[in-house]
Image (cartoon, rainbow, N blue to C red; front, side, top):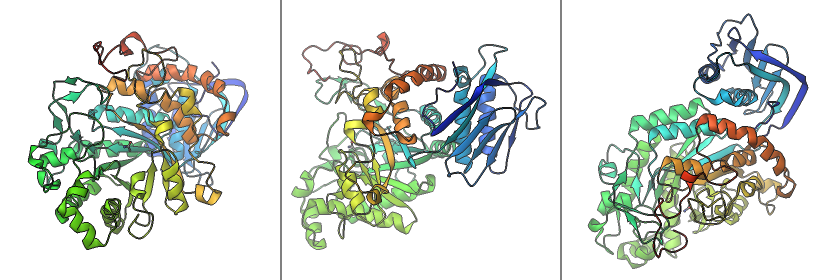
Length: 545
Ligand code: ACM
């Protein structure tokens, strides 16, 4: 192995000559001003894997020097391995951090373990010069912890995995019909009631079966503080999502007055136990607005991110059409229909966030009431999920966009057409399909394209009932996605997938060292297969179960 099988691929890589240098117990690690956090991370990570101490004092056998060079792009870095010292210079601490991540990939994949496995192992670095910087500023992963709760340790682990792939935004989908996952002190029932459901639909929503077992969990405020701080140490921003006014049955189950009480008896609602689009949406009342302002006040205290996601997707309008209260509100505000009522609701929170120095981001349905006047608040951004269309409309209207079209980067969709695929829903989206995903649609002019902040892969967990399924669906496709988000790839048809696969042969060993339960190129391992739901064959079930 040459040590140059990097993922995501760097912008420029020059193998200076065929030589190597080796890290030793005496190799020092020197942190220039502003890079102390990266040095802590590198010493802890490489120190654990190699058993080497990386002393701060200049080592007798060379050293690694971290430094900020403001000439470089903010997230860019230069990495030079020739003679000692090894130099990692970044445009900011984030750039130095990405250089340190690349340094780890230049070593044997055992550098990704948490303890040495071969005493006396050589830690060779190839003579190399790398100049690198990301194509996109927003390189995201959305984790849906509402449909199936992921314990905090898993979130910390996913943050480490994201950082290893140079991703920098965790879009944290914290609430949905099936669960409320964040402690809100002024509304304790959100978690007392809203974080547990009595049972869960097995597999696809057309499945005839439920797992008759309670499922739930939530993050305390200290858990969230820890997650946010852990992410920040890895130069990842955590964007919280509180999904309103649809996808809110868990909140309504906890506080029935939030629902359309003039249409249904909301006191009979429980945390939802199946999947799909739910008709039980928030009532557009002052009480609802005040309630969620209270929620967002606590959310803003916990999350320093510029963007706050308010969902806005799949808000069924059936109850608003029937509700005398909602119809009165439409008349009183001079709106023309329920879509505009939704826009009014979203715009309220857009303005509320703007007044607090934050920016709203929502799913592309927030465009349905138009992009002006009653529509989107200035500064609001859009997550384009129903294909590229929403993103194109938003960018043309001057709104920023994160491209995450379902057809390309929804990682709950199956990765192979074969019968053994454990999560047999949706389109077949292979590793190569993700590798050939292009976030910037050709319809946009260069000026409009500047509004594409970047891209994210979305991991919806309806059919991922445990952390192993999340690993399987997410990897290796997230490695291809990271290359799309970071690397300066040519147009999709010109991308060199064979070269990506060549680099992946080493990357799989890194993922093995990290303990990731990815889908192997040859197909699922026996224990990853799902002949029926959760391993049980189902008599008479529809094919998508
Ligand atoms: C979504 O997939 N409902 C955003």
